[in-house]
Image (tube, rainbow, N blue to C red):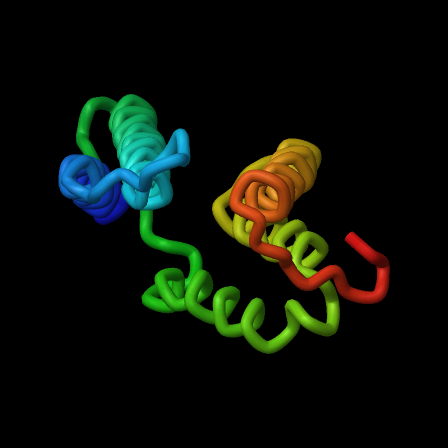
Length: 154
């Protein structure tokens, strides 16, 4: 139930961010303006919130069907520490991205987060690799923001 509420909250927050970003000024000579990155963040918040809410709703329905119609909510596996794990990952990124490399750290962090949420290992690995490469390409080539490469050069 908590994931359902949090997911809907993030989706609503994404909608607010998206609408506020539309008021940002455009930059002359560029195809995109100052509102591009906040708009992308808003869209990401909406999609992530809806995915989280849908997964929580599916879990509630599944547990209700297994219990013979009574709705019972699953307890989180790490009991109140679950919200702290992404925060620890962000601090780890700040401390380790120069040493390990941004893309490699993002792959490892996403893989761990997906596995902790119960995603199959192969699915978690493929998504982590794909999205970390996508983020690296977006920052390096589209936004011209160099990310730390690390010892492997990725």
